[in-house]
Length: 416
Image 1 (cartoon, rainbow, N blue to C red):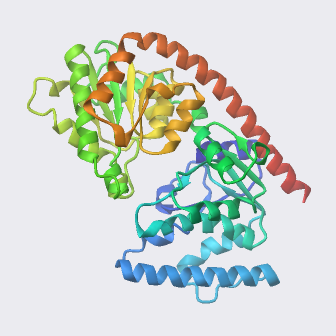
Image 2 (cartoon, rainbow, N blue to C red):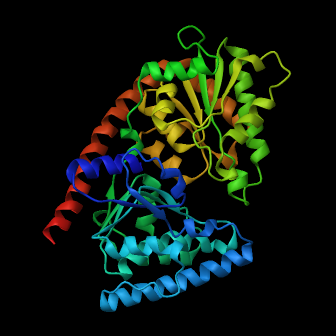
Image 3 (cartoon, rainbow, N blue to C red):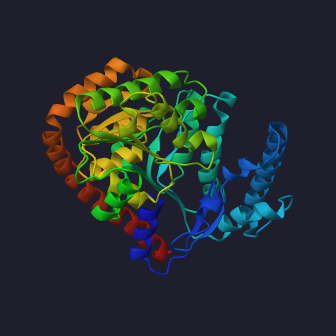
């Protein structure tokens, strides 16, 4: 989503200077485009200290940031009083910006820990632009789920101080309407990952061959992605049940076909909880010692997104948990059974009128996945044709609306 946003910005404004605020700046060290990258407000939480030391440091940094913002708002002067040298680059980026764009994604949702307070960090990042008097534009975003009244009030407060709001799914539309926004207050723009280009058919085939599968002859192929949702969300206590249900669905596929299964890792960190290779390996291990195990292939190397998308195109059916793995598969015409760990998956699939192929992760059982598989597999070719038609229309809509949104933002900035 970030890459697609950048490409569109540079296409419309070739001389634009972009600074990225990232949770993991090291991950952008070898950016193909070469933007300056600074730690985000979320990135400040990654200091290698004890929890109490981290809380103390964050309290200091946020107080100093607020003071610096007030000084700038009143006097237009840059102040870094009390802010350690290593943390000043983010504030400097805000001070020097003509406009602040919130990257597409999903980071404003309820957390089950620390009384939900972590949601204030991304909201603070947005509100900081308003504090400095900088126009804030929100690119296609998922909002929610928000389970607390104060979270919804905080989101409404921030959005009321935003120049333009774009959402990427129908569940976000419902949330904004519930907290008092009208349809004309925001734009619905499908997920930008639908526009992301593939590395090509042969690149995908080469990846599969590297992991022991010849896609031209060893078919059919089932693609699978996992997530360690129990590690990311302490309130989710069904990780083992979810992994077991996926393993049994893989077993069912292998027993009923002469095919092979590819366990892909859409995300490989940087935190252990974010590493999809860990649950993928656990699922594969559940089939170890059986005659089926040699037909299960774990793609456990971090791969560029365009290569993964190219590999997904070779699948006959996709059982995906990671939202963007499902979007990549759908964009390549592959029917999907989606496991929704957050509302965004439900919202995106509903936009394609494919809501019947989604099961929420808390509702995943052996029976629920087996039922969906047995419904989807016999009509996979019919589903693939439906997917191609729906996605083609959505891609055209996304491209047109994104051009209009970014064009309006850039024209407004040039006029001022």
